[in-house]
Image 1 (cartoon, rainbow, N blue to C red):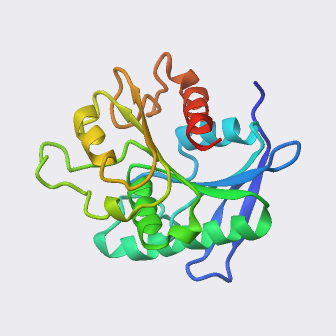
Image 2 (cartoon, rainbow, N blue to C red):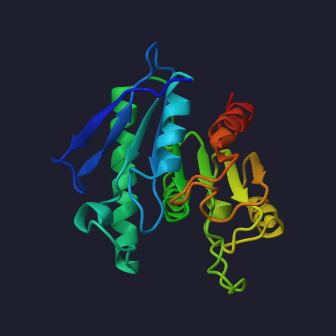
Length: 224
């Protein structure tokens, strides 16, 4: 399967400004998807690129965007004070895709990007038709009591979780319990033998290459 073409996509007049890369399907666009990266990463994250390629070939326009904190600082993790502005940036990205393309608009995010996306969906359900949360950081490693679930009951959008069985930010059992808090349909794609990067770290692990196709299949099952 050939990679889709993509192009820079930006609107610097927005506050926060929007910067990213847009993957356009070769044929008709039937829906759109915004993808957000994890802490310490950016829109070039290998998992995001692979997902964007895969979903674009299914007829979705996909924007993988740099969160506002990453536009300001080229490296390093977000700070606590960045979170609200990062959510505003995701809202701008969703509105831009809704304006640009017909059909439903979905939001996906890896780790930190997924957490901020899910909080945005809980506060502004009108923006999001559904969520794709990969490696949701349910709690800090070795601190299971510090759950990040308080906003989950406010989510009204169907949600697909993708989670590694060796993820220190939450076990499969903990993710199963968390998704029951969401007042909408949810599914969990458990990925055996991988951690928080889902096999898409500095080196893509053997067997990880088929994960985007597995995610797209689970996504279609939940949303189509």
